[in-house]
Image (cartoon, rainbow, N blue to C red):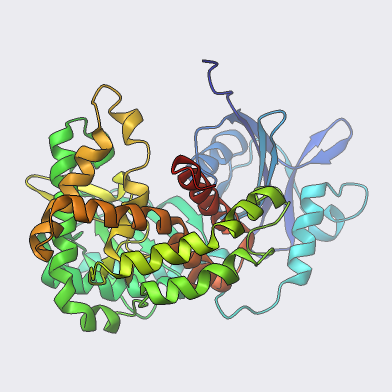
Length: 457
C-alpha cells in the first residue's frame, strides 16, 4: 500500500496596521511581496497560534489573525495555499520589511492576487445580520476586560498574555496561562448562543458530565473555561474506557428525555424524523447546496446516485419512526476529541451543533475510524455499538437485535441529518459562508459510502 502523500501548505499573510491605512510588505527582486512561508500540513486552517508565532519570530510583529480569507487547493500537486488577514498590534520591533500606504499597495504595480481578493472582499463588504465580531479590528479589549474582571473575583492570577488559538465563523478561542493552569476563553457567534444556556442546563442536571466553567456571559456568548486536566478519549487506547464512554453518553441522552421543554428553552431546535423526511428531496435537488460539479462539491453522477436513493431514505425514516424511540439531546458533532475522561466520568464538550432529535444520530462521527484505531480487535465497531445500545435496550424494553436494526436505519440517515444542520442552521448565518460550504457535500459523500456498503447505490 502506497503511503498517503504529504500535503504542503503555503501561508500568505496580509498584515494591516491598527488604523487600516498601511500594509506590511517585504522586498523581493525589486518588487514588493506579502510575507509568505511554507511547511508540511500540520494545522487545520482555523488554528492560528503558529501563524502569530511565526510573524513575531521572523518579522518582529505582534499580530492577531483576524480571519482566513481564502483557501486554494491544488490536488494534483498536493498543495494548499492559505491566505490570512492579520492585525499588527503594538509594540513592534521590525526585523525586516516595511509599511506601505494602503493606496500604494493596491496599485497594479504591487497588486498580488491575494491582495486583489482581499480588496474585492473589503469593497463588497456590507452589514451582515450575523457579522462575526472577532473578524473586526476593534474586537478584543471588551472581551479581555471581562476575563480580567472575572479573575479579579477569584484567587487566579494571569502569568502570561492572551494567546490566540483558533478563529473562524464558529468561534474565537484564546488561551491564558495563570497560577491555576491554562484557561480558555471562547467566543461564540449568535447562531450558537444556545450553547451558553445548554451548558447551564447540563451543569445543573449532569454535573459529572459537563465542562465546569469559571464564567458565562449570555449577551455576548462568551465562555471562560479551565483546563480539564484529563485526557481526551482520543488519547486513550483501552477499549474498556471507550465502551464505558459510549454507555455513559447513552445514559445522559436517556436522562434528558424528560427534560425536553428545558432543552427547547435553551434555544435548541426540534428536528423530528418527520421533518427530516420532508427535507430529503429539497436537499438533494439543491445544486447550489451540494456545490454541483465544483471543487469539493458533488459530481453529477454522485448526485444522481443520491437522488435514486430518495425513496429508500424516506422509507428508512418511516421504519425508524416505527420503533418509537423518543427524541432527546443530540450533540450534533460528537467525536472522540469532544469526550474528556475524568476519573470514572466522561465530560462532553462543545455543544454548538446540538439539537433535539433522534438520539442515534450522535454516533455517526464517534464511530468513524474505530476499526483503524483498534485494528487488532475483531468487530470493534459492533462492540462499541452494543455498549451504546444496551442502555437504550433497557430503557425501551427492547432486545438488542431489535435496536441494532433500528440503528441501521439511523446510520443511513445520519449524513442527511448532519447535512441539513448545515443547510438550515449554520450556513445561512455565516458571514463567510465559504468557510463551511464543503460540509454538505462531505456528509453526502459519507451517505454514498453507506449506500454502497449496503449494496443500495
